[in-house]
Length: 225
Length: 225
Image (cartoon, rainbow over all chains, first blue to last red):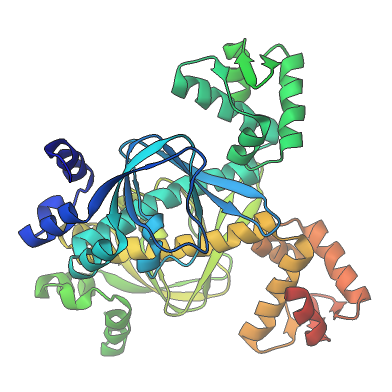
């Protein structure tokens, strides 16, 4: 059962709320549950059934594509306050591709089940519009990732990633494996390891077991620009 | 001035037509013109003003991104009956990236100017929804292109392109330059030329000035699968 606090969070995020009938609002209230996905859990993949719409309360989801031989390319990440519609893509006919969605850390979401979302999207154009608009925002994220992967050299991509990471977390120490970083920036672990060593030799950072310590932010910033 | 025939084409393509008021329909009729863009013309780029919505009557538009050092990656192509909304992306806040749009051959379009489309999109949710839904369809095209570029080997990408091309045109002779093909599949001219020579040595095709003649379709099909 959702509390008043839960409902307020949902109303604020589902910008179509005011366009819903009383019945439609009830339908959401009755069919939305709080779910926790543990770190590493795969919420959605090409073969899985359609979950529904996810509204993130805390944590992080990573959305990526996967090649037949197991290579991953991260498209974008979602955090608290973000809504994930691609987990309901089966009901949106214009979406003909499939993505994978993992919980990067323990992640708490409000899940509105697929049947409810399908009903609402069919009968209320504002709900459908919300879903498409949200997807177009993600399209923008994907275009950004694509331009990075296709047009930027690996050293610049890695520098941008490290710079964003320390600013996001307000912490000069990054505790990600080289494998994880490679997935985020769409490269291979070997390439990331090699480039990190180059950065270390340039006194930009220090590598230690499971950690990257950024020791010279201004040098890193120069690489980003 | 649009003819009855023009209007019928527009009504069929603008699926929101029945949701427009009489005044809104008039607004479109008064602000839509038939325009011809000649082969090679650049309709839209990162610095250009927003044209409006294009409905293609005949011809072909190519939508691509361009790196700072001049590399192009084709995202998708649009043909007769397709609507191009990214040429009106300035009024859609969720779109934060920029594309380039060229006429690949002489191309005739109905152009609904940006002011009209902006007005309609703001006051009628069905128009806005049409724009977003159309953009999500293009998102699907881009994901397809991205998976090809990131995950497929160059020989497979080239084979798929050639196979699609002869089937689309119902003609075993392809009259595109290696440079053009490279742009379509997101590769370099040198790479395409080299791979075409490999295909020639495998008796799949014959190269001559400005032409590629597919001589063994079944061999090509095997490469595609």
